[in-house]
Length: 398
Image 1 (cartoon, rainbow, N blue to C red):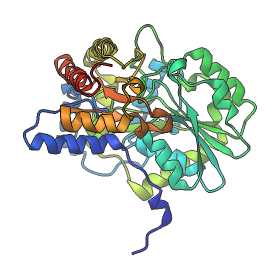
Image 2: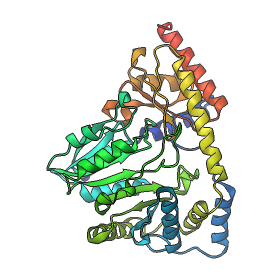
Image 3: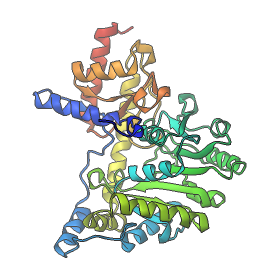
Image 4: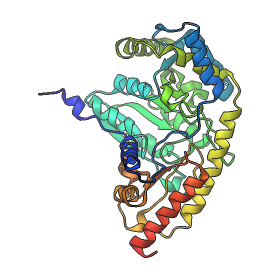
């Protein structure tokens, strides 16, 4: 049976394959510490759950507008003003079933054979997968440890050509935990003035998760690129709502923005119709309700990232930069003599520790592995004890 060639170009997010293998080993009775999946280990706060239950009991069982409930879009407007100081129009806000649909929509709008799209490497694997799917040429922008895992404006701008249609940026970043300073973002925005036809997709899903005095800088705060900026955000990470499939995107304003927004609205009509109704009421409660549990979760991630960094740096041949954002660590394992994916596989199969090899996030991820801090401090310590014991056995501590 012959399929459309584009489907042969779709990649994977290997963290889900690791999750499935870890579950299979657990079903066999193995004790597996799962540091592989990018999912908070906290429960959704109760007032959010209650809002969804109340919506169901109140009879909110039908379709909503394809772009989301007006109340949900207004909630995103309020939240954006609080976190960025920028007031956006609800007519630029799109409620979506997670963050990935925003990537899919933006990348497929600008990607086609002959086009080029720039993306971070190492970076979230769906960027590259969707670029390949469209037939566009994927141009990696290296995210380097020596730069604090922040993107370099100079290096990014140097990769723009007349064929470049879209630039994807991500800070705080998955998988590295890097946070790009405002000064570097200002350089990027200034340089983009020389490339007025390049759109920007800014993945800001980890916006509130910064540490050590670092602050997230939203690209929404730069009005000079607002007419070509798409911002991706959502509920999954901040409110521990990964399974609710709730995201939002903010689209350009002005005539071009309205043009793009109508395109993504039509995509929604054709693809998912609308986001499920009770989840949207839950999303409103998340934004407008108390944030105590969010703050407690972020404080826990702060403690865990310091524990992970300290413990990993005590293992011979591993060095780990302290992550400044998100809830990941991206240690350098090149001195162990292992290729990253081989080490990740053997740690799972032989030591019972699930994590993800750096190359699953791009070619520049070789020499690194990603650990999620979404586990208790006790389980993190167990995992790193097992890693240390495995490497001691395999390398003799050398």
